Amino acid sequence: MDLKLEVVPMPVTDVDRAKAFYTDQLGFHADFDERPVEGIRFVQLTPPGSACSIVIGEGVVEMQPGTQQGVMFVIDDADAALSELTGKGVQTGPVDEQEWGRFLYVTDPDGNKLVLQQLPSYALKDDGSRKTVDERS
Image (cartoon, rainbow, N blue to C red; front, side, top):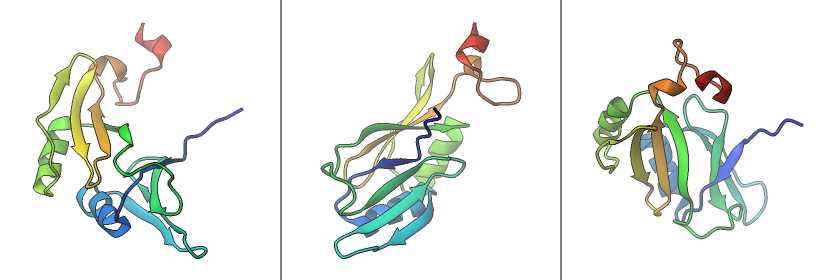
């Protein structure tokens, strides 16, 4: 059985403000923004290069705004990401250096926390693709 993670809910209070943050500041692609029935607004946003999206909207996410904590995104270069994000007005701390990667932490306008991780070199093949656990030993 294949299980593919396709969509992660992101609870927000103001859909338009959140959509602007994710598209204009983080660079997500707006895939879908529709009201299929009264009381439902389904907005699907996909990070560049990702097969998994987030969903925001009205009547589609049951969590309280700000309660999604630690959704992780992999990035190629933490320093470049920090420069790009701060240039777009995104508030983030400095790059957090750990032996298991380099991290940036971002909070959306509703308090949902996102983690951006640059993978450590031991986790990558020469071509930049990920090694499997067996390939790391």
